[in-house]
Image (spheres, rainbow, N blue to C red):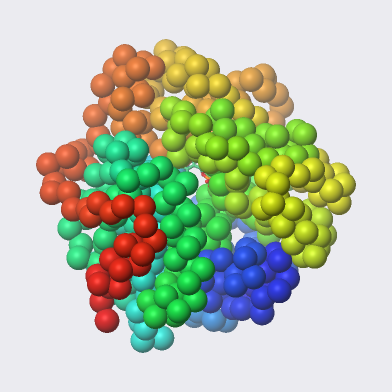
Length: 460
Ligand SMILES: *Cc1c(COP(=O)(O)O)cnc(C)c1O
């Protein structure tokens, strides 16, 4: 299986190279040359079996089937729930899919644990080391730290905005104790962290010298890994039952994974709503056919405080009939003006893609957390509440709603306290987190300082 770039100016690459490089050299995102047909999950099929089949379908003959199975086994061994993505009933015809049973209590673990195992495996076969870097507004960094801690072939460098992530989120990044995990606190906001990472990748010599890679939400391995739980939800609720997934969204990687699952034949049909907070550029894309850049507002659901949903590019590529030239023009104009109207070639078919967007205010998010607690006794995280609010607003329908619970409430105790007036202690399995020793480096927001730090701290 070959992977091509949405911008059309990069050489097609295999699965492993698409995953290791993240972004294509022409600035585009990798997508499979054609969609593989994958057998839907069976109701009695273990999660790891479905995951192995899905990853193998994209890896083709690049990775032997038993290698993929071993990678998936190791990736999900650390999950506290053996179903990995269990469903619980929330109301009549409404379910919640719990994606927070991984080591850092957020759905990012589902993909990142797989990436950690995949990278270490293929790099040891190739006999090379890699430096992996990412900027995080909270959950990605912790998930990456847990996934790569102790990896023999990878040195991880995480950039987070100093004092702008929640204490629990920070602890997950800074307490692994692993000497190949490096945490850098930048004296600026998340956008600056992301800009620094971008500058690092723009420096070709530095990329070559450090064998630099990224694991942000545009990495194809993440999309592939996330499409698995859409398939297991369909199997659990009935192979032919129409489902509507409500996906708390930021960069849109999670929702796109649902679209991918449908394209590969893993779902009975496809309907998904990207539920966003007051940062509603995704909703504007779907409702108004406009792509706008705004500075991100700070909300109770910080993992979704994103202004430009990067995975939209993959969806635009697909629905436009895979027209890289048109896409290059669109993204060039967007880079210049930060506000472009989608051409009819995208906006028309987008309406028939099964995806849509809905936005929820900060106040509504907090009262939703309280309401779900009143109804069920559950504490849900603010991101999940954005999703349940959107489901509720849809009213009673024939189709079954599945809301993706993207994080555990205990990751956001301050917000739970404010919304519900209750403590939300960490689950037992991570209860000792706050007593662990934190290690991080505080650096100014200079690319040169970060570059120097990586050169000094990577293994040779
Ligand atoms: C990352 C994240 C999201 C958004 O996921 P995307 O794939 O970026 O759309 C939602 N909720 C939580 C808790 C997250 O960590």
